[in-house]
Image (cartoon, rainbow, N blue to C red; front, side, top):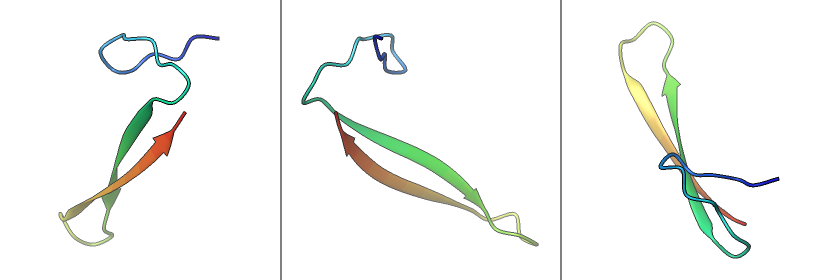
Amino acid sequence: MDVKDSNGNIQSDGDSVTVIEDLNVRGSSLNIHHFFGISL
């Protein structure tokens, strides 16, 4: 299976990816961005 990034480029073994996740805070309009890296 080919894994592609958001630009459509195929990822290879050894590539690094950064995942960005928005976390909503209950009762507030505040969003927290959570970043973490993954190595393929």
